[in-house]
Amino acid sequence: MVEFLIAIGKVVLAAFAFIWVGVFLIAFLIILSIAQDKAEQSARDQHERLRRERNSRN
Image (cartoon, rainbow, N blue to C red; front, top):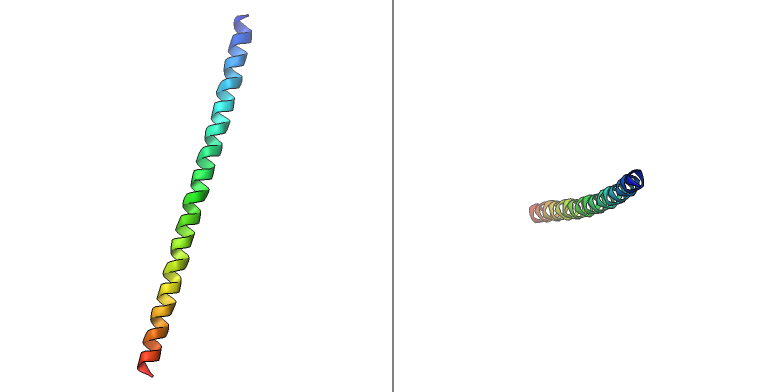
C-alpha cells in the first residue's frame, strides 16, 4: 500500500513538473515574440530616419 501511494505521488509530481515546464516554455516564447516585435519596430524606425535624412540632404 505504501509503495502504491509513493508511485501515485511520483506520478503527480511528474505531472506538475511537466505542466510547469510547459508554462515556462510558453512564457519564454511570448517574451521572445515581444522582443522580436520591438527589434523589428526599432529597425523600421531607424530605416525611416535614415531615409528622411537622405531625402533632406537632396
